[in-house]
Every structure is written in structure tokens, then in C-alpha cells.
Image (cartoon, rainbow, N blue to C red; front, top):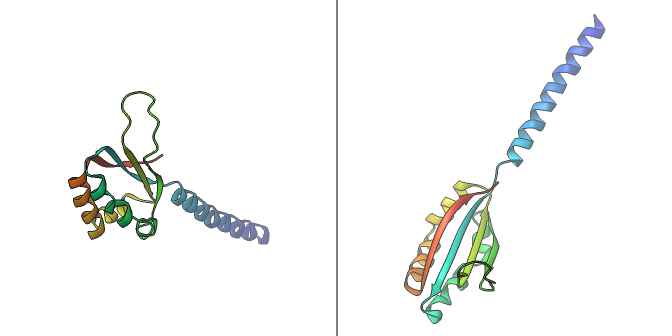
Length: 126
């Protein structure tokens, strides 16, 4: 009987530990979400200078995001290259949406609309 009880305890412990590990792996497997901004033209370079100044890495990080690409150094390969390209990684769609809903993002969007031709979209990662 003692062998069976020991086996049952070991089996139960294995199930608990296995469940915890699977839960942790699943949590890590959630793909990131990306915000992509493509500037086809900067129509007012002087006015546009306010955008990078407001969009600091620390501000993006406060929403769980980080810049992956933030550049105007682009080499065209096929078709016309944008003037500036930005990719921001967030750990969830909810964080990306919270960033989009912030007052600072609304201010940046207003400046961007007046000073550039651009598109912005949110995509799920892999």
C-alpha cells in the first residue's frame, strides 16, 4: 500500500508541476503586436521635428512597447521607399491600443497629419 500511495503522490506532484510549466510556456508563446508607421512624404520638415521629440523611447516603454525600427535611412529594393519608417513592438494588442488611445499619441497624430503623408496600422506578430 505504501508504494501505491507514494506513486499517487508523485503522480499528483508531476501533474501540478507539468501544468505550471505548460501554463508558463503558453504565456511566453503569446506573439507580440506591432504598430507600423510608414511615412511616404514629409511635407513640412520643420513642423515634423516635433514628432520625434514627443515620441521618446521612455514614453513608448511606459505602455510596454519598444522601438524596433525608427529610421529615415532606407534603401529601396523594389518600388518607392518611404521617407521614414517606424515599427514599435508591444507585448499585447491591449498595450498597443492603450498607447493609441493616449493623449500624447493623439497630439503626435495631429502633428503627423499636418506635416506628413503617412499610414499607420497594427499587426499581430508570430
